[in-house]
Length: 255
Image (tube, rainbow, N blue to C red; front, side):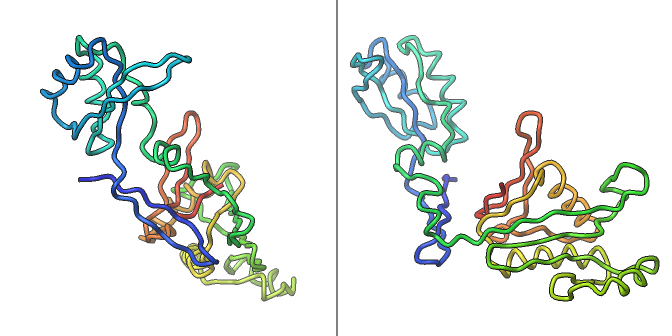
């Protein structure tokens, strides 16, 4: 019932996860009468406490009330309740996401000194079967996944079929790069295993948000495979970002 922030970072080359469980969500209320506002707020639930502060607003000092809550999910409801109180002129900074608020207040700079952190970065791309002019994940399999990382590995994961095996054998391909597995299920499993085994910190792709990752997830579901490449074993998660989709991999930023 409390929000926990997890910081994913590398210290002397070792990946570390630090949990922050004592940072509380808050926002400000600008009062018409601070005594009256504080008195009215006592009747509201989900507010842990208040603090009187003097803030600067356009070079002018103003008295405000800082409202401290238990959980970020309570902010929208409490914000509306406070904004409707007679003694409240307006609320401020109630729209700042909880994790961003922590970054601002702590002074942390994400990716600061990343050049010195020896980050393991990988890139991947998929090719899909496309006999109809457009590929659909409910119908058409992934036939190839290419993979490379900053530690020097290059891989093409694919599989032989009755129609392509003679062609493949005649090409005399480099066995260090080309890995022929038995089927689509195995190349998806191998791709997931590579990211885990290589302890990748950052995943890069070209349009992986809208195509590659959603396609892999759909095909993986067909075989009951979990795309659980988050550092904590969590699965890849898709979310809508305006007109496009976005993919989140916990602890391994996807760019």
